[in-house]
Length: 210
Ligand SMILES: [Mg+2]
Image 1 (tube, rainbow, N blue to C red):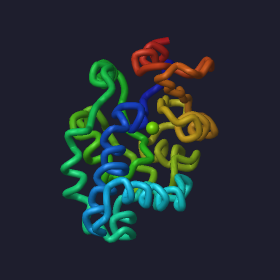
Image 2: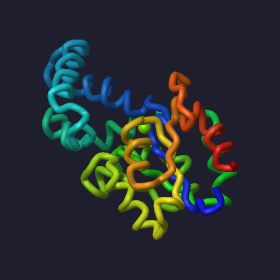
Image 3: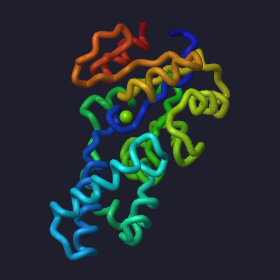
Image 4: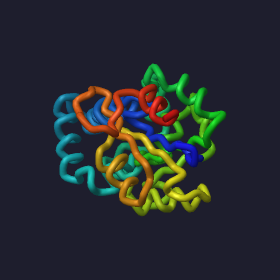
């Protein structure tokens, strides 16, 4: 992979575990909703999950914490997010891999999370990255092939000069490939038998050295 200049990483499920987001969506928000409406936690959690389902993950609002706080009349999200920061956890190999790749390539994050989340999610590893892209905040879209093309333009490189890795088959593997970006599917559970799937970022790094 001689001509690779940029290595692009998804954030959640790839660099950082889902714990922080889970704590916000399924714990902190229901707790606040329960308090504000004088109901118990379980009732609140069920009501909130129903609301999430009605919107669904194909709509942009699903990912937008400010939309939810407004819709559910929960005040402002920032203090709630601050309180969950101790839940931010990186996968064990992340720092080692970023450290070793950062001298050889430009590293970027290409995430579907909003900047509200990325700000917290990447707090300890942000210095490794030249640029952090949020498809939702920056381009008002999910991670489509168009998003990846814009990322190439922004970085001033051709699709063939980027390699991307992430844990969502559609958003991290299919979409970047459609525009000619080499992509690897990160399947940490190792359930996929595909030549371009990897079970950790260490395995991904080994492919880069090929
Ligand atoms: Mg992900």
